[in-house]
Length: 198
Image (cartoon, rainbow, N blue to C red):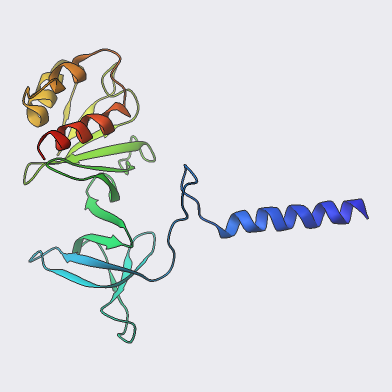
């Protein structure tokens, strides 16, 4: 009898976990199904509001509840909003979530390149300038590199990274220059940079 109760407990416990797609910090539950949002067309940049449903490689969109759904891939849309979350499509990361918005937009996703597929990656985007891709694997040390557009920035070329985005404003140059500067420090760095411009 105790085994049956234990099995039922485990089934109920893990069954309930499987039904709730919690964020890593467990502060809220990710939305599912159809959500309010919009899509941004790739060709003309038009923004169309309606209902959005996410899939791994595409999204379904309809203008209202009674409208027929239509699938969209990255060849026809460049960004979309799903509930409170915004996503943009980049060559090296696919659909990537916006985590800090402002003068510099900071996105977080996973690398899709052959050599580093599945590696956590930040994408920094400032206006019409090329996106800068920074992978988690100690990008400022050793043989690892920072990918900018189609090229790479080695440790010897970190000066270009500093000037490219932070242009020696405030203490940003010195913060990136420090040896103890870590991958996650980029979030606070970009947040502080954007807040200083408000």
